Length: 111
Length: 115
Image 1 (spheres, each protein chain N blue to C red):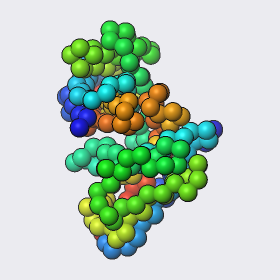
Image 2 (cartoon, chains in turn green, red; image 1 turned 120 degrees about the vertical axis):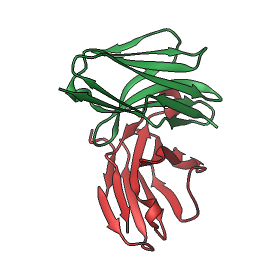
Image 3 (cartoon, rainbow over the protein chains, first blue to last red; image 1 turned 90 degrees about the vertical axis):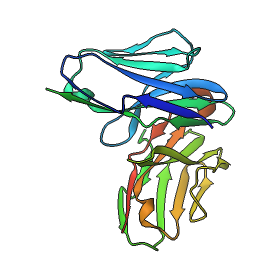
């Protein structure tokens, strides 16, 4: 059974801090790893990673995948209160055709 | 595009009642996923369809849950009879060629409370 473990479960920081969120996984037939941000409503897509060592970047957010060690990190620099959310990591199993989600990391950014 | 549309947004019902949740996919998407989210168990996949065909329903908790996709753009998730432990937010998500792209587009969810 595919498994995704995220850490930490929750994190409280102040504006301007840099945070690193972790995601480790076990999947039978790895296709891709995805990061989502969930505020009050539905998860919204951030990144999809398929290759090791290639950083994906969008503004202050960046992510990288290590397929050998089976983990990914999501970095957020110069955090803002608007970054407060639950960050979800998911892995896509090619053969099963479905994504398995971790429990998420709840990030709170205080002014 | 309007995105994935779910209804109702909120539902409060009594134990034993039938609940039907509805989902309209994004036009052109061919994969549909029903997820349930709770504090205790996170985001769990219940069932998913590809081209209207159920592919994996191993996440459906028990026979009280059923899902249908009568056409390419619409799906229902039914709980009969409902129980308090079914209280959760139910998300529908769609994808275009999910097995290849991976990205899911989520609806805003249906928050179900069973008293």
